[in-house]
Length: 406
Image (cartoon, rainbow, N blue to C red; front, side, top):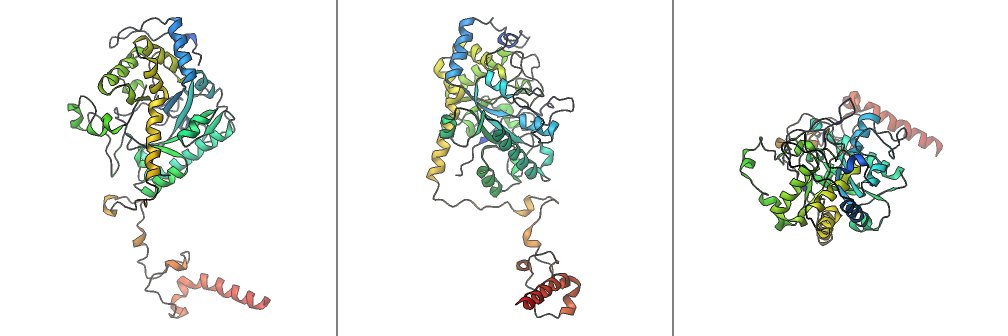
């Protein structure tokens, strides 16, 4: 997701991206304007007029099985327009983007993964700092509203009576190629990381068609994503990834769900709407309040209640729970301490600590434990004075005071 444009709408995405999720292993009622599926386009078949019975079935299903949405970029909008401030904004009736707390309620969203995203242009610069600020914003946002609760486990998600807040980090460039940062993100509450966004990292590549010819020959999932691995495909609703069809409607989106079900089965499908992370969404699905319209269309196409329970939340919670089991089974293992070779991380913004100790004399601001071995305390003060005098003068003055008051 790119930053919103100055006009208040998010900027368009780059090339379509097959999003790969890596889960961290360490410890509404719909308005009349939205209930009618969008008009047909040349690329999609016309949507069938809505029937009251299907509408009520969709809403009843979502009341019992509220959606766990895998991706929302409202924190990015807050950063763009409010500089991460929360005091001057009311998120209940927030109208800057496609998300507000009231609209999430109307869309029967029971849990929301908020995206901690920063642009690819920040890679090897200040991506880590900006990501930490986004995580801090999400945590403060969830603590500022009585209807929200930050959760980090399946149990907590299922037990809360509030809208559950979860954190996902979008883009491996936020790690700055460090497993230590990955563990730190987990401690701060992040529960998934997408390996890439629209840029490569030193250890992963963005798998967009047009960039890697390999994907032009793939008609289904690659071996990484085959259902035998027990993963889940989180379907984005952004028009930019729906065949780049700017006239897409609810029926277009349902076509994608039908196709994915035919390839891998309904048990491996979830929803990651991507609202506030893109400029355009299909007709009838313009904001987070319209999720019931999609469920209604899938019911019309013959999807069973059991299948849709999985799509809404069961499938994601199954995978989340399995990851937690792996975490528990791995508790006795030491964390990986592997590092990327310095030569593979060629950036003028990176410091190599081992090289910082090669100067003969430390600066007056270095810790004493960082003094290079070549310097000896037996050296005369006159030689060391240009560099060491400020620190030694302070030490000497303190010694005099201590002796005076003894």
